Image (cartoon, rainbow, N blue to C red; front, side, top):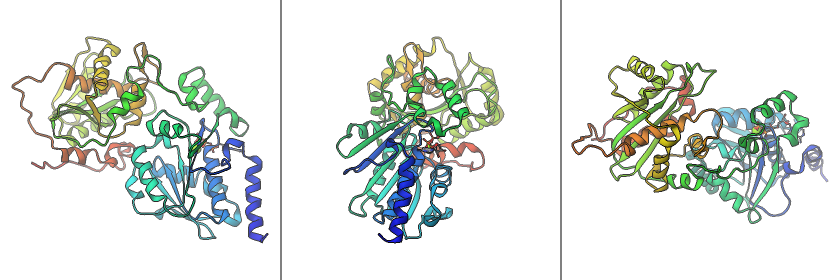
Length: 453
Ligand SMILES: Nc1ncnc2c1ncn2[C@@H]1O[C@H](COP(=O)(O)OP(=O)(O)OP(=O)(O)O)[C@@H](O)[C@H]1O
Ligand SMILES: [Mg+2]
């Protein structure tokens, strides 16, 4: 055995000595190894250690690292406490070039970081292995996954490791259905890793999730299938997701579900902001979820921005619930935006039911995958909301689609002031506008679609 080989096996030994079985790659042939773990169960450490082993084996040298966001890839997978740099032995430490999103090992192996926010970047490169962290939280899970598969054309035994806390998204359910064929699954709970976690962390998560359905998912890593009595089953939600070619829109509304509190950034619920349109093909389209947790001025701007981005007809919000406040906030940001108060004559669930029925009839389509919104939808039951916090996103969704498709037909003499073309919508739904960092303020570039007709 050469000196390098000895070192390689020493590294392997030390991780293999402390790892729990679920953190180690299963033996035998597999293409995909899925580690379903609770929060803090040791998923990321398992991934980083797996990458070290691949590199030291000398058989793998073009590795993709895929995280929900670019910041997750850098801060967790590469630079985090359980990440690749932190866990590398001195004699096999890669150098990191953040601007190239690239790690290079002394033996020439390379790993490149990608994010589910930019699946397009996965067009082109070749990989022989991939580590996907928190796949259930990916932005565009299917598109990112498909692109990743195309890049795995290097080497003779391409392998993918997925480390994630589960969520019943379609991609994960499909992968689990392949268990025993090309997919191997290992499982571990937060408590299995308790010895390596701060007691305060265990206390905090147990207090938060104890006895809840969500705790079974977040701590025990169980895949929760449909909540009993769910208004939207996962199957129905999946049907709304597709690679729809968006038609021109007859009408577009931005619906706001204001939170009950003042909306300070660190307290209270977020403000649901959902954009939906009635397509010229008769289908309802959910175009964006711009829910945010900001001060009134902040969410007012987000809503008005959505109004302009999508050339919406109006902004709507419920009157009973801080209605005057919403009108005031919107008018302060932009006095020219048409605003309509809608009145809740029925309870939350009764309002949601006809909208859920539209989904069941396959009349609603989603322009993108809205993970958080879908989770809230799946947690709405005929007895109430069973999720975390309050269902602000679903409330906004229900207002928007009720306005477009339930409140009665559009009057015969209704003339849409502007036809919003599918090109407008495509621009407005482009990923950098549709998600996270967009709301941070710092990256907030002024944006207005141009009219194409
Ligand atoms: N087998 C182990 N032996 C010793 N320490 C471990 C082991 N597994 C994980 N740890 C430690 O436990 C902590 C949590 O691990 P890690 O960050 O990998 O968890 P995670 O499941 O990715 O967490 P999160 O849900 O926050 O992403 C880290 O400090 C890590 O070093
Ligand atoms: Mg992690």
